[in-house]
Length: 544
Image 1: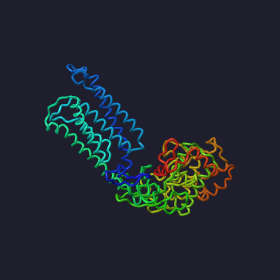
Image 2: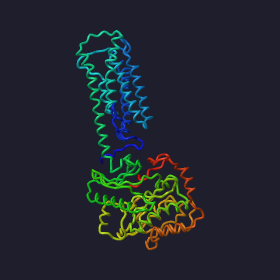
Image 3: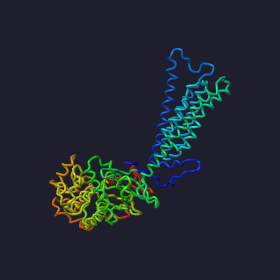
Image 4: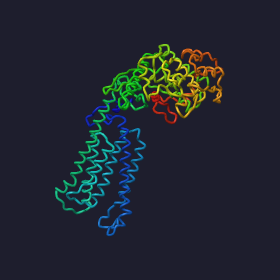
């Protein structure tokens, strides 16, 4: 897919100045890549300096007839200069690792590193000047290679390249001041030093190419009124990116599907596109505050279908349990009541979600409210009863649910499913919340489906050390009945029964607030990928 282009939320719009091009005109990911390359360039030069030391200290003394280092009219300072170059390169590697979050400064320091390296090379090359036609300085390689590895803006690249190219004539002049006698022609001077400046002109070419590439990527990343940011997640249904409205600066998440993600199977591509369209339509018509909110949808210039949804701050239920363990019964009821509210509206409108699972239920922070549940991913939604086009949505090699949360009638291939498949899945999720275990466990999906069809589930109270009231045990098992007629009629009835449990303790907003302050403190903005206690982004888990 053509890569999305992004302007960071805190960055001003890119613009040209009278002195050159601003580095902010590069997309954020290209900036990050350039910063990594500063470290690569530094490592490369460190290797070359280490090779120089090896040749001077080990190889040179072993070659018969070679003059020992340090002897002669002008002792060549190869060892101390190579050691200084190695220390400089290793230091730049350390700087690159520390300034990854300040790319502009790092890239500018990298240009200084280029000039200093050229200065060391020029110092060695002009210690005993030999000006002759056919000889090109090693500085040419530095001037050409460094901008290609770690590009900067054209103006800065050119300034650094010219400065680096001037190291040879500078040290040649110093050699003359030291009393070194030389008899050279103007042609020899032009040949020896002119190549450096020609390479300085050529060094700007990579900077121009990358800047032009940045503009192309920028245009490719504009979807409607939104600019795409970093990728949050991906899966068979598409990819999810952080985004920002160009005028309102409102954070959002964009989910898109492109033809190249679908491979060569035309039927499978049609099925995925249809599911994607249904997901957008379902999210658009549902108004429950516990259903992920749809802002916009459309088709990009390259044919990619996309829709824009709210960017959440929180954790999906699967991550919640995996990181923090099973939740108390009262909290599980509190969370599931909200999920049931979303699905109750869907059921009232004749819609069946068909892929209810912990990764599609999100505990989030909305304003000052925490433990606010959002239901995600309506990609498998359908209207109740058989539909003429439903066969297309069960094309070969495309799952119509998740085996660990699949109702028996779905596992049996019954095409005439209704909202009670969602009730069954909600029972599986409730089981997961209070026990941290799946209702059935098996290494093979077919084995799991067979267990859902024929085996009796163990009550959740027998699979956890946390207290589970008998009434909650009974309600979970009612949701997991093999015959759909024996389950709660829909999510609305399930919500009513959850609210009527009358648990001894209640999960209040104050308890929820304390839990979030302790475990998932507010970072002040929608979060990045989960790392060492940080909160995961909303739609990273919304693609199956």
